[in-house]
Length: 580
Image (cartoon, rainbow, N blue to C red; front, top):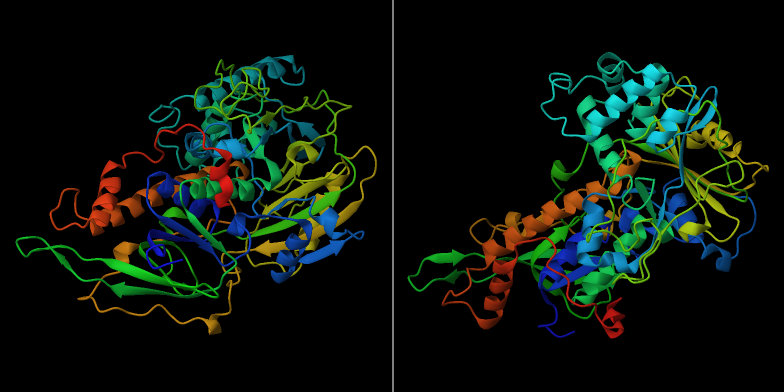
């Protein structure tokens, strides 16, 4: 790499989902981007790891890891374990970004096959069609009408509606009972298996926003509103955005320790009348065992020792979570019963649009679509003889443990998600925590694991398990602090770095299960425009007489950016994919 090759408009630090979307969008816009990560894998805290890598990762975080049987390195590589298990709403910012950027062609997706909820009376399927509500004889006609009235309200434009006026901050369960007169069973199903509320104090307005998003997602690719990404989900999607950036000229460096990120003052450029027109804040980025330092106009990302801490603009209140990842050797089955807790969106006639992933109207893969690498896999509905390959099990607050007041979710992934080999299933159990961090997460989570295992028709054997806690203060630095220097101070009359550093707040460990992907996509879009604004402040408008040819090109690119994703060009040849 010569000096010219080491000069970038933007260096992005970290390959988490937010950073990867930003890097891809900047590269698609025509800017010169370098993307670096001290880890040897893509995805950061949202990575997908093989089983051995995940076990090492969990042990570093003081997790309790148990191998029920020896797993060879070859077998380990057949698993893709997600550090941030989630599902993706079929409509929303992330799906929009996947389609508009062309990254959808790099991956595949499964529809979530089944959603169920635990009650003391048993585990009940939560169907997703209007017909199921009216077929259910356990719900009175009056309750059916009340439920459908609420779902019609939640799917519409409820802002300013008299039924919501002045009640936005009322606990959602209270709102459902008092405004729509839902009984306790239906209230619990709506609040925890449809809105994915964390607890019984969730404000009404935020819960309604989520429900509307999920209801409008139903029917786009099939009955379920949710998709699961192949090969571990978020980590694979992050890598897809990185690949897309590389196709557009992005430079990737992984597994190199960051030695320093230092601001350097550039000569002040003046216009023909002698007035200052811009003051550059540029950075040197030095990496271990890398030939030349990189220089850039703007740094995007975060680092515990070289960059100031990010503002909490794009984050939410930090909540610690206890997690269990378990691999089992038998499928789970949830048998339909006459006591199903039924709720569904009103009928929708929505079909995939030009912005949809390439599937037919019936949800099956479309072999004639322009991006044939991407598929959405349909799985038969759950019945007495169909095992669950992709599913969600919800434990409402205090339903299994009277002393635990938050919702616990279990995400189930089988071999159709490409995350496990044949006859293996991954269970991701997530428990948001209240109060002090527990010393023994296994003790807290074991009852939920045992209850989930009881759904197997044949007793299931746990062949791997890991129990650990993630909290906002528990993330270890990538490199010991003693090996880093601090960010140097630069005199204010030389250069200000504040406008040339775009911090990326760490993604919260807890959000309602379907919210992680869209939260990341919204953050990425905002930070993309912050980065563009920072670059525009450093480069005069196109046509300025004092611009050199190289700076004029950058100024022209910046002037032409008016959307997050420019229109896609014809698909690149396979030779263009060699960047990753």
